[in-house]
Length: 377
Image (tube, rainbow, N blue to C red; front, side, top):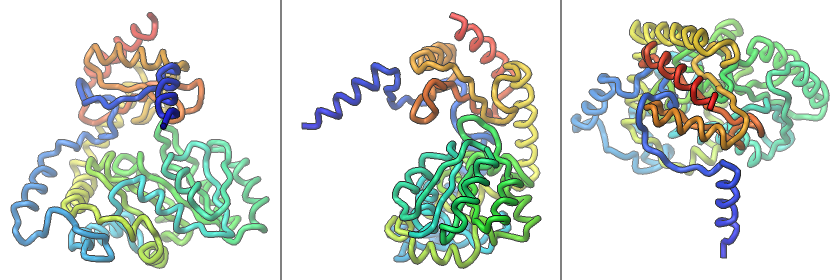
């Protein structure tokens, strides 16, 4: 029985794609803690205060949001997030994967069409597989290819949805959001923008790259955004921002929402606190530090290393070589991991250098030196 399990593991190992759980060790160059807030004392204090307050509520939610799992902490977070991101309403989920999956399995329905950038996250792809809508991918950031699809599908589709990420997680490049919005208006389509790697880091006050379009175009009439809370926000979960009717529709029809236990109330409390820090003067200072570090890293590693942002892909090609280089760097005290297919396309195995405001220039200087030595052996 289950011979395929053993065979699959053997094949993964032979290809250099076998994965295992490894505890954090050394200088953090792999997490998504972009603002260096995962150990923030104010977040620790907020958690302690919640648990010490006998009136705050239980540790666990105890049920789905539509049962008894909806708490004041969830409600207050969603109201605050709506104010922060300029949305009519928001909805909080336990994870970003769950939220993305919920969007794609709920909003596009039979008769609709979803057009998606070929580099969108696995959670979006899995949502599309489960969706009753038809879906078609377009070449990464290619607006001509997207427009061709929009022209072909406009007369066939009941509704058209376009999925993209504001910042792509493996290459660190940005979507042309202004062009995307223009095309959505021209062809009467709805945009779904995943702000996972922009939230907290980019846009006014760290509100994400779509925020300019929200202000310019007066809201979310043509837009749904997703802000994950486990990256720059340093907690966990995700916030969907949209029109009031869309959020109400998701509450009433989204199976991942209806049939999931609500996030722990303290999780909502901590996300609320983190958002406040991000919007504060301190948050702005952390963003400035990160920008300076990104520029310095680009100088050290050269123009071929990424797009000048906080995600720096160091493409090595072969899977086994990427694993080997990562191992050499780990031995020198740098916690960086090899990224291999299917996470990235064949032949583009890489190290994903993830920059954080908590890093110092010396960390990057030492890394650059060891990295150049490691790839030359």
